[in-house]
Image (tube, rainbow, N blue to C red):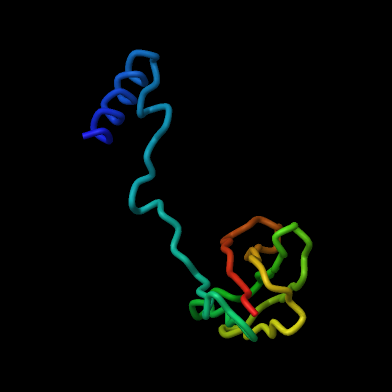
Length: 115
């Protein structure tokens, strides 16, 4: 009941303050990005594998950053399957970014190293 009341009050507040759904459009299902890279296992201990949908790994850079934002690894023009040895990685959360030739982030995610 509390959730319904909160939702109703939020909707009324947005309506009466002039905000509308046109100003904040909801993405259409077709606009949702398709993931082109999967990674496993997560959490990882000794290695993690980044696997691309066939034909999508060309002309991309896979960059891995630690939680403080320091780049710890970069794989240029990755293949379909890319195992990464985690022996030099400390325990913690890491962020990966898949970038195109112009440096635009195509996909990003995070994984955990637990030792």
